Length: 333
Image 1 (cartoon, rainbow, N blue to C red):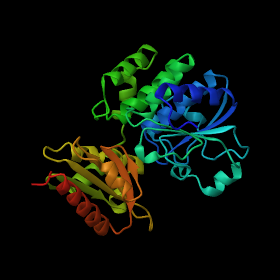
Image 2: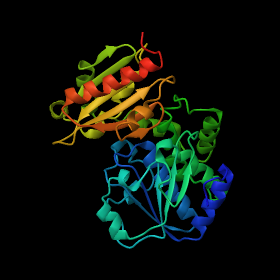
Image 3: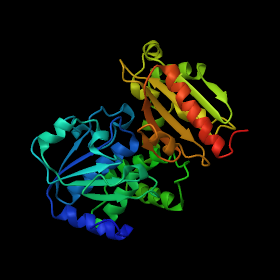
């Protein structure tokens, strides 16, 4: 009944659904990034501004750089055993992507699910689905909902939503960045978001291990235009005294190389879990389609997936696929 609604009609319908319910669970994908965390906490502030009860749950730890956000100390690592009136999944195409198990969801019982996303790979996994592929970030959709609700956009909410938009647009550099994105950012700054403080926390508060790990990855870097790739092993992680979150952003150095249209960063996972891939591209090539072929997904120019190991096999697989796809688009010389 909600499939063919306009943007405004979706917002109105969602506000009605929220108004009819009192207790909410908010969650997002495993290995949460700035949009996942910022939009979830922004949604928490919005719901509480409407007088609702909210639990925010993530299966994985919150990276250090986002721990300045208001409400981050309230995030829990387990799902409530008492079922909420509704669950809101943000930037997360299905409950499995949250990292919580089927058994954990089963313990909650049947819950009305609201799915808000800007990835086309998200599909209609909820009872109510708001998929807006032209949105710069899910945080921008939460912002639209907040404005339409009439709730006060506090400095705390503004900071969370600004963080979501800043990080999911690649600091306002991705193709999804438009004039409306800057207008949104301007309003959030007017409402109390501090761009300098947020940038300091996200970009200038990294531990030494992150840079040691970056050095290891760049030593492994290979460039075969228009593709660049690099990798790190568990031994590299140990030698750098680095954590998983220290590997975030390494792929962006690769896509910054002149002449590179697609870049991939490969990270060995513990045990037999395989190889985690982060994919980036410039505007002419869609890496989301590549990631979806391997059970992953994401943005057109920033996506991820996991392949079986060993590293050499995963590398050969993804490079062969990228070469084929790029050749089909006549980007290979």
